[in-house]
Length: 127
Image (cartoon, rainbow, N blue to C red; front, side, top):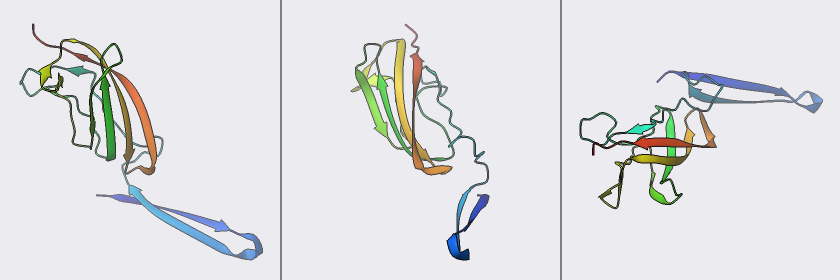
């Protein structure tokens, strides 16, 4: 992995100096903590395309996801960058409709900054 080294020098009172440095991945753009892709459609029909809801980024360190139905009841949650949701609740297939998600994550681009976001996704099933 390519890294970019950031250095900061500080001139303190009485002529003393201090410095610090850190490494971040070279492809972090510095304008946002991470490039994140969150799909907005789930079609769990076993065609290997959008069969599960999964957050994508090469920079994720930690991830927590919660999924809610249109009435605000939590139907699923998971922790971990490799987690996903297949459109079921305790193994029972949920119907087509709009669902909402909340995510919280940290990334290699800003490892000390937890970011929260949310949105909606459409679950489509062939009836």
